[in-house]
Length: 409
Image 1 (cartoon, rainbow, N blue to C red):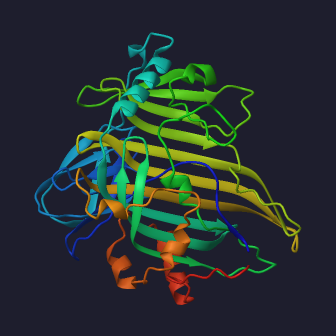
Image 2: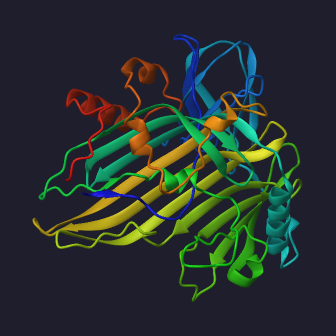
């Protein structure tokens, strides 16, 4: 059976839209200077707690709610802006100014290490819990062929460190059948890489843990330098830290950028790569896999009196050789999780939340959910790209959308 539970890593959280037709704001987030789209910007109604992300093309869709209302739009590389929305609209263009750079503001050579330790201490000291909705989307492509898509709405319990528990509220899934010639690569538990993501590395470094720079002993394991300082309109400074794991460290480790608010010591964002298979490699008499690279991005936002993960994105790219055909193709899996409607009060019984566990497979839980196509047409949560819309339509036409099969491939 070609279903793979993926072992050991991190990341990405979501949100859900429940507005009625016609009460929606749609548009694009753009760089004011270049007029280029800004992917994965956060849009958030402070009055209702609902929000979304712009998609890869900078496009967004969001329930309008009572208007006029203020909409906060942010991205770590741009100046946060507050837009007054007078009425629902289909072609809203939101332009963000690039962040002001002021690297000269940092002169202490070990400032990066100090900032990380301060942010880690603040996260570890927080006992705040939040409850709400999370939206998950996953897309798998084997070569140029889309082979798998999954969308889930979770009830979620969240701490500043991680996702503490989930309950599936609604879900759908589809995958194309495989055979000895196609040998499509499927994941039965890719969502663990996102739901199991932690902000802070805990415990001693080991082969069973992915090393992150957000740890108290960062100075022993990482080279950290302040690469930039971004000034926000409210006067707060955000440090961009370049964090590279020390040469010679053999276990799975993240290297990339960490953004920390120098004024509040809050973690703002992690963004980087992990060049490791993390247990997903498969080498048999039929296939070989190699050159795994994981990309990881975790965004934080202040909600309900705490600083919580807002969105987690994970991508995996690897080469697969199908021995029956001699074909080598590049496979890609992308998934993200977006948080929404967070509050201090659980919307479902607290006993309903299940601990995130590598051995609890989402697909088996999704199998028990009745597929409701009309629900999903009205609840995109994060606006689908034309590619994603075409894939879903194609799967619908082939009759595989919403079905679950666990036959040997």
